[in-house]
Structure formats: structure tokens, C-alpha cells
Amino acid sequence: MNAMKSMLRLCAALAVLFQAAGQTPARAEDAQTDATAFELTPETLSALAECRAPREVLGEAAMALFMGGSLPAWLKPVADNGHEGMLGLETFELAEPVTVFGKPVTRISFLQEWVVIEDTYDAAQTLIEAKGMKRAPIRMTEQYYHFLDPESGPMLGAFAPTDNALAMMLGAPAETGPPKTMFVGCNYTVASQQEFLDAAGKADATAAGAGADIMEMLEGEP
Image (cartoon, rainbow, N blue to C red):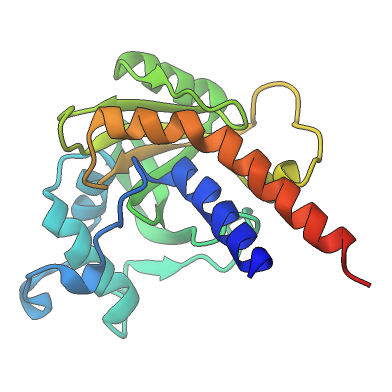
């Protein structure tokens, strides 16, 4: 039972890095849409990453990508996106570039309610400043936010890759200096800015507690 509680706390700490708040994300199968009438296009992915698409489009896109059975010819999943430590990160390669945040890209990733591109740290910082994003109150990783609607989102955001998040929770030293890349895009979780800030403010303590519990559990094993 203690081990299960520890893992739940660990999952909660990781989730707060990716979601706008600790609310249950909408599942693709909950979207009230007709999947047969929806056509996924490169422009759809661009609009999702830039927070220009309605929330229901994320559900339609998720149905097409993960439950449709076959992908369009212009899109294919990436077997190795360079982030094995980020569970749930699904990356897709486009046959032709699509414009996202003013630049051509050929890869777009999905992570829970996020739709993002990966860019260099300097380029991400330029976008963060241009979009008026603020630093989230999380010490264990670098994350920024800007709510388009402070009451319910969506949220433009940027966050550093969290491949080593589990190791950090278990006591590994944090990497020094800025990350090489950051993910930038849109989070469609239904949550207010205050809910996000409340959850983010607790993330470090939750992660530390989860890591301590797991270490205690491991040390108690024969």
C-alpha cells in the first residue's frame, strides 16, 4: 500500500509539469465529434500548437492519430524522438514543413494535453518574451506560461525536457546551466491560471516527498 501511494505521488508530481493543473484531462474518446467527418491536415497541427484551434479539435486530432488505424501519407510517427525519459511524449514527422510560431518545422509532439514543437533554448526564450510568458513557480525544471483565458485556458507555454525528472526526484543532482532545447506550444487542459499556479507551487514538495518515499521503499527491500 505504501509503495502504491508513493508511485501515485510521483505520478502527480510529474503530471504537474505537463498539465495546467491537477484536473483530469479530457480524453479523446470523450469528444462529441464525428471522426469520419474530420480531416487532419498539417495546418490543423500548426493551429493546435499555436493555441488557435478550439479544444474539440485536439480530441478529433487525437482520434485520428492514435485511434484511427492509419495515418495520412504526409505524417509518420517518430520511433526515437531523443526523449526516452519523457513517458507519453509522442512525436510525428511531417513530409513537408509547416509553419509554427513563424518558422518552418517538420516535427510536432503530443504530451497529454500539450501540442508542442521542440526548439533551441535561445529560440524558445525569444518566443517566451514575444508571447509575454512568465516563469512558473517550479524549481526542478524550467517552465513558462501565458493563459489566453485566465479562467479556463488554453495556455501557451514552454518547458524544458524532463528526461531526468525521475532521477532528480530520487536525489540525483540537477543539471547546471540552461537546457539545450525547450518544448513550446499549447496546453488545452481546462483550468484557471490560479489553479495552475497553485498546482505548480506544490510540485517541488510533491516530487521531493514522492522521491523520499520511493527511496525508503527501495532501501527496505531485501
